[in-house]
Image 1 (cartoon, rainbow, N blue to C red):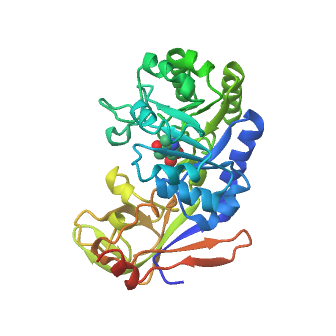
Image 2 (spheres, helix red, strand yellow):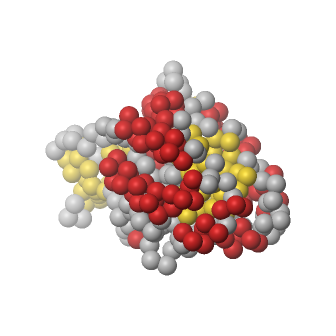
Image 3 (cartoon, helix red, strand yellow):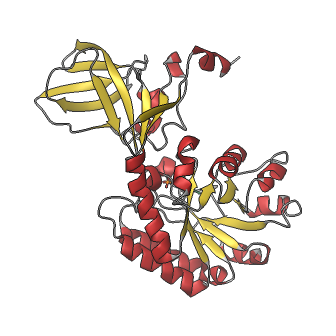
Length: 364
Ligand SMILES: *Cc1c(COP(=O)(O)O)cnc(C)c1O
């Protein structure tokens, strides 16, 4: 197959899925895939064997989840418009409003539907202001316990999303206790609560058994069905971005240009200023791997190799499933990576490729 392409490895995906299924068994908490992180629907049938459904951030995501993932479909959006609401309701089991304003606006339209409200607990684990739902002046959810209690008889659930790649169980547990202290009275009146995403519970060494016990206690204390909305945790480590070296230069450092672009194909690394990952990243030869767009800072990172790089060499960037394919773009007209799947038996199938017509049809 011609590079560039994202390669989803089902056996790596399965390892995450088995942890998710174990957690449900041990805790009763259901997991819904957050499509904003990963919406590559060719593997939804596979993931749906282990997860309970999907959750969304928009009309288009909720439709995709309903159509392709199945199971339970949660609808959430920071704000819905009048011309979206009927379709959102038709494609979801639950709708979670971001504000009391939206609950009021769509009160009549959504009267027969299972409804919830997003609550902003005012604390988070995000290191990045950009991604911190509890940042000052945040628009993400209602924060005042009294105002939330006042609408509690119109909803049956609450959604909290305040973790961000949090791999520290104790920190998660402490924040959950804060949530209980502040909103416990209202949680008692609910049938379900969602704790959102951002909990890195599929990571190496995460104390899954302690998480399961904590979630079970939460569910028993309040008599609620608990939901998790893993995005990154569901697909972490499950794909690579496969690229080929096109050229090399030397300007104080060894430079290799690949047939991809961090800005176009792994945008979050640029936004959060993190390097890509190359394995094993050992050897005596240091190289800076650069993208082929004309953005000066289009750099994947600096890595070690066993031998000098040359045109034609393959570079695989690890951990390329989350927030990559959903954010890829046509900047510089760089060829968009295709999507391929490595099946459990090792065979690789190409499921999507993009060409000039796709580039042209994305604009007019
Ligand atoms: C982003 C988001 C998720 C998924 O977050 P991850 O960090 O990818 O697990 C889940 N729920 C909500 C409401 C979100 O905004």
